[in-house]
Length: 106
Image 1 (cartoon, rainbow, N blue to C red):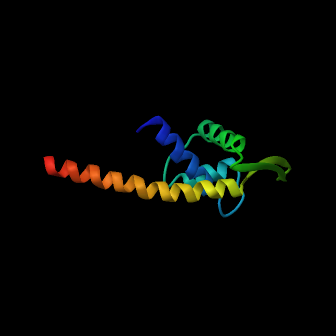
Image 2 (cartoon, rainbow, N blue to C red):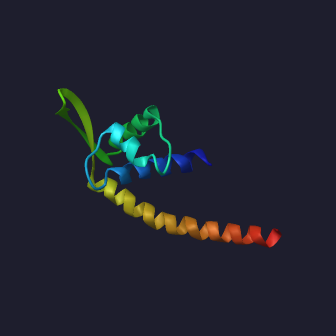
């Protein structure tokens, strides 16, 4: 898969994982596991990139005597999810065209 495409998909997946409630790293990985494997190092790189782009914010809270970082999607992040839904429709149209063409060569 194209690296840029995969990067964009992972970014959107992380945003989707926190769209309904704030979450923390381990839970995000756990929630995404049925759909895709994501290492901690990859996740934290994505989270930092999303924070820099103002698609999410970070706050710390104590949990069992330790500080934990929680991630919260911003309005800009929600906008990115909406954009993705529109882009996905276009991508699926291209996919249908490509696979239709391939079927003709079989």
